[in-house]
Every structure is written in structure tokens, then in C-alpha cells.
Length: 79
Length: 141
Image (cartoon, rainbow over all chains, first blue to last red; front, top):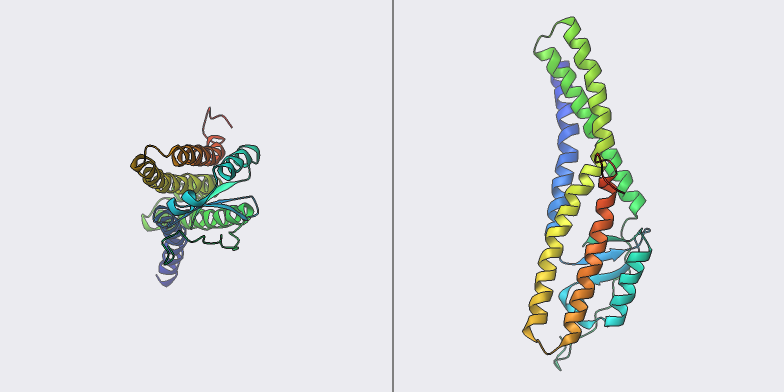
């Protein structure tokens, strides 16, 4: 019985941990304060927030868009 | 805003986010863990339900393949879930930006910026979706 319970506990833990991690990551994505554009290595290329966009030059935004189109490793991150 | 009323330039934080490889590795590890967990649970359940020897053998064999399937599809499914979260967040941000552009219709620069940001975000989200499409039957990469 103890072995059965231990197996059940381990399996439920192994299921619950990744699911909880995914749910937490999803909530973090939705509730993020800022959106970041990063390259493949995680280097932050730009930060999107209404305040930041107001300050950024249109030319810089166009260049960023060009880079996103060209470099397929860029990604959108929540922060 | 500073005391004089002008918007103060906040420097971009020099911090580095985890690389794409690191994120993918984490998703891979967690998928393998959950695959193992589901496989173990199937074996436990087959024992609990007092299956016959043949049924137990079948369940144990199926559990292995279920674990493999979860470990294989898990990262892509997790990607899709998180991309949906990003989509919700981006939609809210773009709504804010559109409202800002509408607040001053004479300012064409902010409207152009909003368009550019919208297009950039759309491209970034579409790039992420391509990965998921690869495993979808008939999906184009």
C-alpha cells in the first residue's frame, strides 16, 4: 500500500509541477507590464509600452520591424 | 515625468532574458517530467482497477507511448498556450496605443508608430505560430 501511494504521489507531482508552471507562465504573460523584443540569445532589442513607444523614434521602430522580418530568431517576451 | 513636465527618458534595462535555447530546454524537461508522470499514473491505475495480466501489459505498453507522445508534443503545446497569453497581452497593449493615436487625430506620427508596432508584434506572433504548424497535419512551416 505504501509503495502504491508513493507511486501515485510521485506521478501526481510529476503531472502537477509542469502544469502549474505552464499556468503560472500563462498568467505572467497575460499580466506582464511590458512586452520585450529579444534576439535569439535573449538580448533585449526593444521594449514595448505606451510610454516607450511615444518616446521612440519612428525610424527606430521601422528598423526594428525590418530586423524582426529578417532575423527569424527574434521573439516577443513578457516582462 | 520630471518636475518640469517633460517625459524623462528611461534607459532600457541592460538585463538579458533567457535565450531561446534555454527556454526550449526548460519546456522539453518539463514535458518529459509530465510524460513520465502520466505514464506512471496509467500503470498505477491499471493496477488499482485490478486489470487482468493481458490488460496490465497493454496498459504498461500504452503508458510508455503516451509518455513519449507527451514529451514530444508538450513543448509545442506549451508554446501555443503561452503564445495565446502573449496575444491577449499584445491586444490590450495595441488597444491602448490605438486610443492614444485617436486622442490626437492630427498627430500622424503616433498613428504611424502604432501601425509599425502592430505589424512588428503580428510578425513576432506569426513566427512563433510556425513552430506549432509544423506538427499540425497539413500545417505549413
